[in-house]
Image (cartoon, rainbow over all chains, first blue to last red; front, side, top):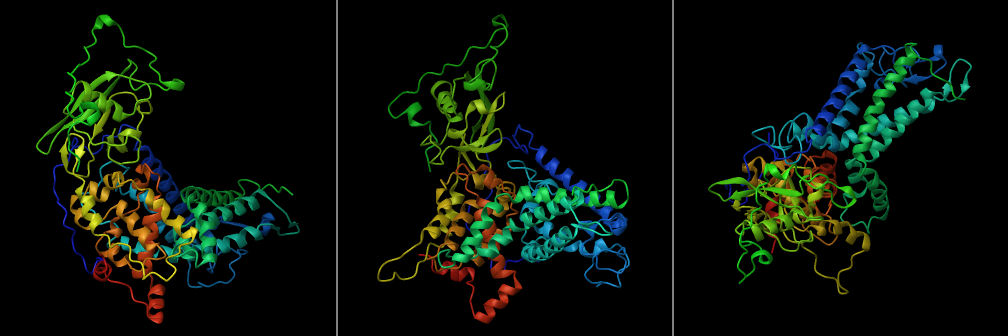
Amino acid sequence: MTTVENPTVTHVALGGTRGGPDVPTLRRDRWWLQPLVTTTVLTAFVVYSTWAIFVNKDYYAGAALHRDLISPFYSPCITASCVPGTRGTAVVATWWHITPALLVMGGPLGFRLTCYYYRRAYYRGFWQSPPNCGVADGHRRYTGESRFPLILQNVHRYFFLIGLLFNTILTIDAVMAFRMPGGGGIGVSIGTLVLCVNAVLLWLYSLSCHAARHLCGGHVRSFSRHPVRYRLWKFLTPLNARHMQFAWASLVFVGLTDLYVRLVASGTITDLKLF
Amino acid sequence: MTDPTPAPTTAGAGTPAPAPTPLPPRSPAEGPPDAGGTGPWGIPLPQEDGTVTLRVWRGDATAGQLVDYTLPAQDGEVVLDVVHRIQASVAPDLACRWNCKAGKCGSCSSEINGRPRLMCMTRVDELPEGPITVTPLRTFPILRDLVTDVSFNYEMAKQVPAFAPPPPPPDGYRMQQEDVQRGQEFRKCIECFLCQDVCHVIRDHEENKAQYAGPRFFIRYAELEMHPLDTNDRRELVRQRMGLSLCNITKCCTEVCPEHIKITDNAIIPLKERVVDSSYDPVAWLGRKILRRHKRSPDEATAEAP
């Protein structure tokens, strides 16, 4: 499947002899470090999150611990198999009997998989196409994102909208984490702060997304005729410049949030109440 | 196309090239190389013995090899300075394209230690110790030594349908400052073609050259598509014939741009999103049907080119 219906070729001379030695790269710096770090961190996250999703326990610290903390991997918990007390606003998937995280992971996963930054990261790190700038591509043939399945990267804007829905739910989770059920009233614990930081980082990651920048104002030809969209675009543009940082920070913190909730829920540590 | 002969300042018209004066080899009796060769603020010189070695690609389309040239190091030099000193001393026939020596003409593009850079903007004392490799742009056919045939880019430039404004109103065209500013970044391009050189789509896959405009021209397409007075629609053209979907946004073009143009974030990705509007977004498709808006085919987009 190709997307090109009406191709023609530009008449350029092909096959000329190139200069320089015929080696994959002449770079002398540690060009391999960046793809190595990317691959390592992403692999570690995938391994941890897969384990966390399938372990299907200790994802909620509830009234028994006087807390209301849910792991971001399991929110919203909308299946009949969710542990009692999790705030699924409604049990939607009564037919779902395996880990509830598997049902809701598609949205955030799709958002990150099709994200323009992560595409750069995994094309370089995993696919070696190319491993780094000025280093030879790891493949003999190359069709980019012009064919199936990579043409599906173009659905990124829809995953962005789904991501906003998840951000809203995780923000509600963070707000609800101020409750201390079982007579504790309203308070702030380390877990509350962890969920709040997680929600803030996810919002920053989503709002700095290139699709957001396009949908909010980047698509217009004339800024002066669309002043509201221009203001939105101007607000999002500085965030967009830090999209990579937000992508990494939010990814790592989602994992850390899950880990913290898991440790509290399993009784390994006590969630310290600050006030 | 520049004549691949030594630059005028080193072997100027009517001026005979100075006789080659290679450095005498260091004998063991001279002792160890000079230690502590440092530039301003203690920045180490490329070689601690106070010399600089350029490993330059010499050759043409038939054959070539890397040749070492060792000269005394001088403070504050850029790679182009050393190339000029090589031309002035040991290799007057070394071909190198250059012009402004100020990072504004884009002529002296080459690959320094394997990274596409301008020779005139690359300080020798900022490079790691050891020989400095200087090779021609890898993506384009070699003419001689450091000079390549970049006519691929001029062919691609010809394919860009030009700016197509509407008939001027009685009081002339008017543009607001925010609209002017948006395209200003793209106009900083000096056409050094480093972005084209580093782009693996054509650097490592020669066959893609026939259908891939490259980052430099995606900037141009983006600038035109974002121009408030332009009436053409080039989205299908860049999708079907200019290979926008071949770009996998690895951002190397942005990394090497000497003008620090955010090529990927501000030109290629916005262009990709506009192509999604025109070809992949079912809601946008529905909107076009309801509002009876027509998107231009590649032929229609190029038909209006002057």
